[in-house]
Amino acid sequence: MFNGVIVIVRPKPEAGADFYQVDALPESEGPHVDFCLERILDILSPTDNPIAKDWRDRCRDRLNNEMGEAPSPSMNRGCAGLGL
Image (cartoon, rainbow, N blue to C red; front, side, top):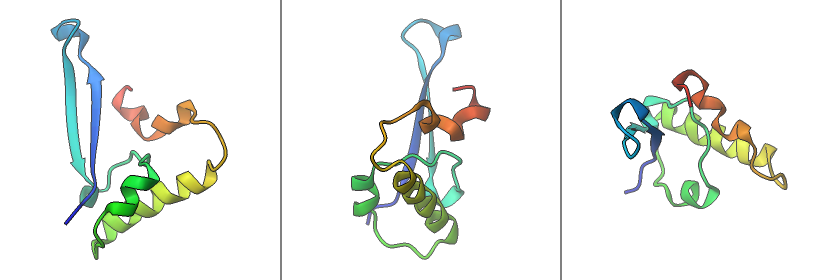
């Protein structure tokens, strides 16, 4: 069984040059970040969880909207409130 987990890695300069903060959030908790590679979405196990389904749909919608376009800074639009 494969479920989606969003992992956000960001620098933590107050702790030193080589320190990072890592946050993980399962898809079932409705993460704001909606960037996931299609090949990852394709291997996730089916789910009945409506929150996880919504996240997957948002990720696919985003991929469909950007089809043929180079990745842009908007990739992190869900991270705006996180200071990323």
